[in-house]
Amino acid sequence: MKYVEFGAEKNQASEIVIGMMRISEMSTKEVAALIDSGLEAGINFLDTADIYARGKSEEILGKVFAENPALREKVILQSKCGIRIDEDFTWFDFSKKYILSAVEGSLKRLQTDYLDCLLLHRPDALMEPEEIAEAFAELYKAGKVKNFGVSNFNPMMMAMLNEFVEFPLVTNQVQLSVAHTPMIDAGFQVNMHWDGAAMRDGGILEYCHLNNIVIQTWSSLQYGYFDGVFLGSEKYPKLNAVLNRIAKEKGVTPAAVALAWILKYPAKMQAVIGTTKPARVKESAAASDIELTKKEWYEIYLSAGNKLP
Image 1 (cartoon, rainbow, N blue to C red):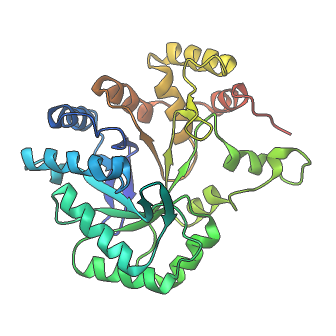
Image 2: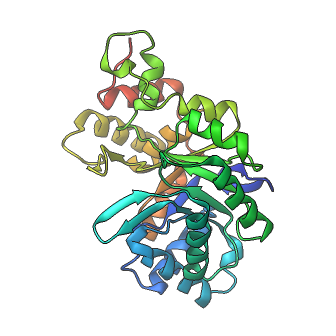
């Protein structure tokens, strides 16, 4: 397992992250086994959010920490806030009052005194950076949050926050997989008429690379917006053929190759996986040690239906 420097304390964070979104129906013993399988493979980073299963995912994880007191200090724990759900109505809220209350709720559910990192989950068009800065400062000084980041933010949003927040943003969690590549497509298609030339993200990858911000990828093995996993999908026959061939050559799984494709990008990268199976966690961990050639990286990219000018 390879690691990236993460946060003010420059913690060594594993390139593979275990996502906790789907653990709400698991037992504490099953979740503990999932985390242990990751630790055995070198994965020391857990990602969750206050809205996952309406807080139940955090509650289950908190019970795991309570039942396994030594476990909390072995992992880097990250959660998110900012998405509010009131029955069937959803909106975004980055007010100081809500950020503070959301973190208090997460800490209580997680049965921990602090988060290693807090992310603002989805951009709030009405966000006031001064309020966010005040909330972050209060949480940091109280020892409740050590680092701060964002999710699904474009570069201008990040730059605006960095003008007010006294703690540099350490990460941006965005959707990226070999079957979802608009951030990469736009870089290839500069000044072209093709649809891929539209830069919808404002240059997130380049901005994060330039500013030493960790890029975390969600839906790392999916296509579309939660449309499904591309591995084994009849919608991606060429991609699967290439992934299967390279996986066989390297003695790993196709999933590991697909994750290695993400990690090949020359910035500080972490790929979030959403599996609930310990065996798949171990298989995914192998991605960090796969050395794809540039030719292999481009072959995988093109096999997903992408094109070069």
